[in-house]
Image 1 (tube, helix red, strand yellow):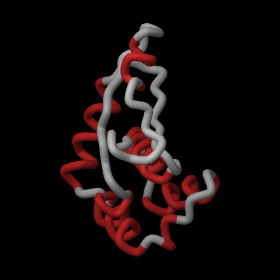
Image 2 (cartoon, helix red, strand yellow; image 1 turned 90 degrees about the vertical axis):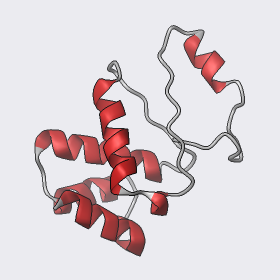
Image 3 (tube, rainbow, N blue to C red; image 1 turned 90 degrees about the horizontal axis):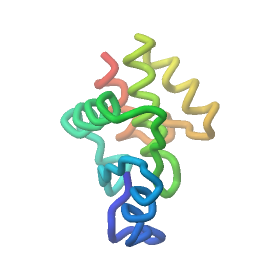
Image 4 (cartoon, rainbow, N blue to C red; image 1 turned 45 degrees about the vertical axis):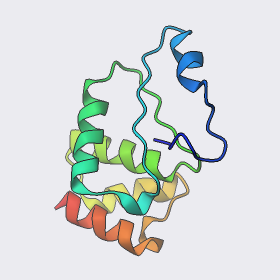
Length: 109
């Protein structure tokens, strides 16, 4: 969930991962505030269809946490409050990100 031009992105990340026999998928997003319904739907579809176990990562962990929590939340049929509580457990208070919080609220309804 990183962009190839992002600071710290390994240019050979795909080669390093696939050399270990692991499927690699790059689903870039610039910022957690760029989440849209279409992006989230595509991300959840990719998460659903990828082989498990699955590693989702990004530079800070915010966007990957959102993706993982949306997936688990949909699978377990939990509400927004549970997603927010899990986010806090992971060190991300989504309520401090107004645009992101609005997206999560709308998406979970």
